[in-house]
Length: 171
View 1: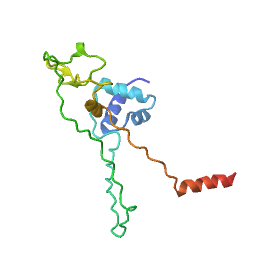
View 2: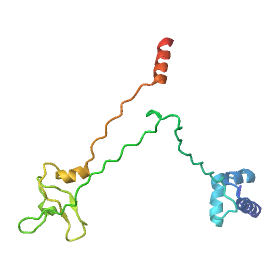
View 3: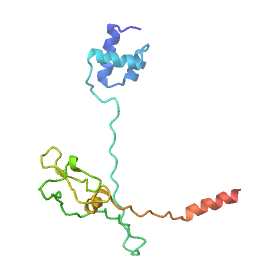
View 4: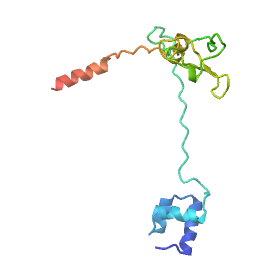
């Protein structure tokens, strides 16, 4: 079915009313949602009076629960999250050789710290250059690598035990 002047006017009216392309296609009949979208773009109908989708309602903000004053035991108190690991390392300048030169990309070797110091686009950019057995010296390794956090052991509570017992009794 083609786009007659009457159908185009109906399309414009329904589009401005805020109907979706699918709803308009159903009302017009004989056209698909994509045909309606294509015609809307060719006509340059960008604005709408109302949005086609309902606005999302804001989610209510949940308030933290407070422990009652009657329960003062340690088990009733909320757990504190572990403090993040912060390594305090003094600012290290690049190691200077006897002639005053610093370690650059061209002078890097396996036995020196490869921690970059400064802006790579700056002429004063250098690497740490202190002796190391790995990629970095001990000070920069403490910045680059964080210690592994202890793993939490899974505790088996009453509900898990109940489920296990019910499965065994069903056999």
